[in-house]
Length: 201
Image 1 (cartoon, rainbow, N blue to C red):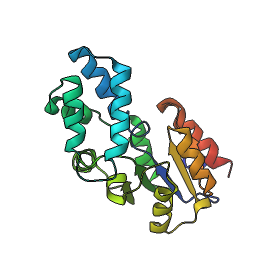
Image 2: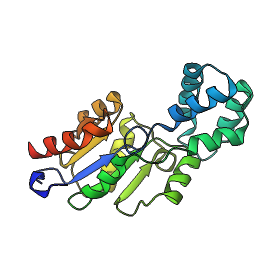
Image 3: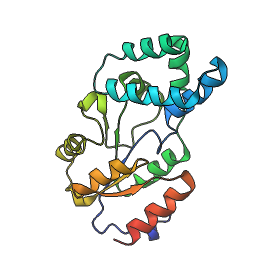
Image 4: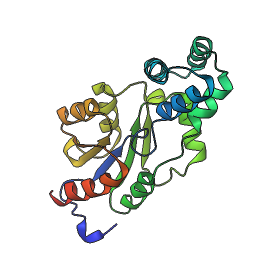
């Protein structure tokens, strides 16, 4: 991190998504691995996992998620859990750690409880001021309620925040509330994009 490239004129907080930004998408990684082993259609499984993930990411009971996937695709529940948790963070995670020297860093992410628990237990989250997982705040992106929840809990106005997410629809909603945003494309690009965005403000 080149401190000379950082200009704190307006931006005080950076809010990261987890899956697809700080780490690979767990369902994409899991669907690819599971379909190779259990000979199922990868796109079909991925779409099904994504639909069910949205359904069960606002509550603590996620057993139905595993029961449905296991029954429909004849995959053991333990194997589904193993593959979903076999997704370590990208280098973007370490980049966020460096940014925490200059900015308040947060996470806003749609996650089921078992993933929330795994992430908090297995990775160093100490440099984040606070993490907001959907199963804990009971709101999912791109619902405005999720962003409003974060804004109500942090000491910054919307225009002082920069939001980074891989899904365009989430960025659009964030911007509708006055939160500046960057759509994440890949890990090589994000550091350049953030520095460029911050330096322009």
